[in-house]
Length: 339
Image (cartoon, rainbow, N blue to C red; front, side, top):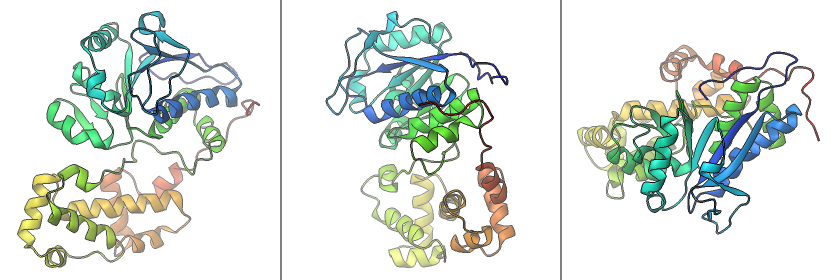
């Protein structure tokens, strides 16, 4: 599969077929979140927009990290044509990635099959060399180590990333967000809100949303001053502290705080603090009815124009455009939910 065709009015959508290649100790919530989004898309459109199957290399069901197995499971070679093959990972993914698996993934890539990964499944694609020069996402617990091991992969802290024919996603329920994005591209913007209503989601997240990565996980346990400085920033969003104030409260020099952030976070502390406040403002824009003025004040900005300028610089559009874009149009006639 190479694109996302949009259905024309009055025509049944083509069926997209996905294979979920489950690795030993895969995360079941990641798999279930993805599959159920497809199931619900079929239900609300009253047609088979999607089909799917589970696979392993040998056809024997893999045991998930919760100790359960799922059937039916097919051998990968017996699954037939697929639009995307998703590798579903979980814990101890390094042990699950065998030479046979890497060879199978490379064969799929040679056949120009689009490849995806849920949770830690991205490790398998990276190990096979299939994410080189691609933007990719993986669970935050693995990100630091994988950035070192695979420097040719552009790892992002987004919830999911779609780069050409690679579809990668972090774990937990984030695969639901990835699938809602894909479904929206296939079936139009009216279908995803219906699915989210069925699943009682507060909102549909997109690739501007980031997975929360604890700073301690980024920098390790031995940088207490850096972690304390970041905690002070997070606790003082509405009335931001100056860098000198943060340094004094931590008990180090301003210069040392700047060195720590630049070395271990890759940003100067003022930029890290500003981005933190802007991400908080985005949550308020999408999840509350607060006015843009109220949000600007709550996130420590002196004026709405300054807030709007900073917001556009980080997210590529203004706060008002963000809020308007989150209001998806209603479903067109003729595609009511089924039972």
